[in-house]
Length: 472
Image 1 (cartoon, rainbow, N blue to C red):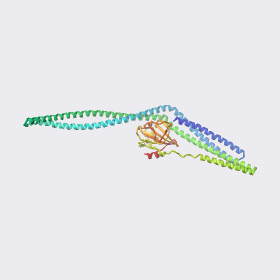
Image 2: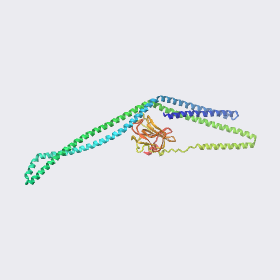
Image 3: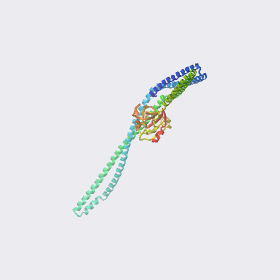
Image 4: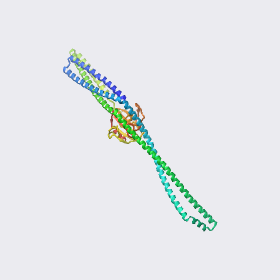
């Protein structure tokens, strides 16, 4: 449990003891005054009835005080047991925090590896297409060469001899000779181009093999990182199970005891309030009886004196009524200035929701079967913003929530932002609506990057749907 919360509980307990003494002393004084009134000859039946009711209220207060003390004793005993296990639990929390850090780092590496694998795959696919085109061109060149070689084999020498024999002049012979040279040059170029294209195909195959190796290596790296993430998640679940074994059950029971203590304290406060109201009522009755007795004495002394004193008494009653009216006016509460309807979406640009408020199948070990918030988005490192202005009351690590931030918006309302990869605010900091609180992560009881967003009223989680649904 948060140390500050513990201190507040201890202080509250001390104040409660002091608060208990005040009505007890007042009640004893009231009984003394009642006895005096009885001795003065006031209505005996009224005094007896008042004493009986006063005794009942005192009994009710003592019973409430006893229940409150028993609840406090149970809470204190469990706190001591939990404290003795806290050192081991702190080591587990530190281990969980380190694992979460490694998980975030590995996820970032996986994104980079995936991007590199995609790039290499794209190059590999392009190279495959280029190789296919080169092989097709080589096949066409090879067919052309085969046809040319066959033609030369069948007609080459006879064609050249025929050209020379048909020549009628030296000029014809020279032209025939030039034509034959061009044919030979064409054949040579055809052969050279075939050789070049063949080498090009060979080189492309070698490059393709290298890219295939690089692609396989990148995919193997990504697979290894994915398996490492799985091992991290399993390690987190094992560590959290160990933490739950040490502290978790005690923390849940401690929360029950704290609620029980709060209920007992509330019952005690009500009993004290009833007792104080009764004392005030009886004091008022006694005061009026005394005034009535004095009035009768004054009537016997003098009519004029009685009238004068009666006027003073009426004036005193009017003054008392005015004071009461002023006190009632002073108790009017101000209008609640919290406007949840002006809430903004906590994860700008990402409105995906995976799980909302209510019952669910736990996604992993340590997860609750009743989801007390909304799971939003899934982009690692995305910015998380405050849905309303307020004061940061929590900014730190928790075994189940991971890196979390809690913002108090006043009037009992707070918003909770969990599983962050990084916290960007500090406890006590004033934040504006839309101010960045941290980055999306997968710390705590989580299997993938997301934001768990919750809304609470006086410490109890409530469904944020009335305010978030209209923003989707």
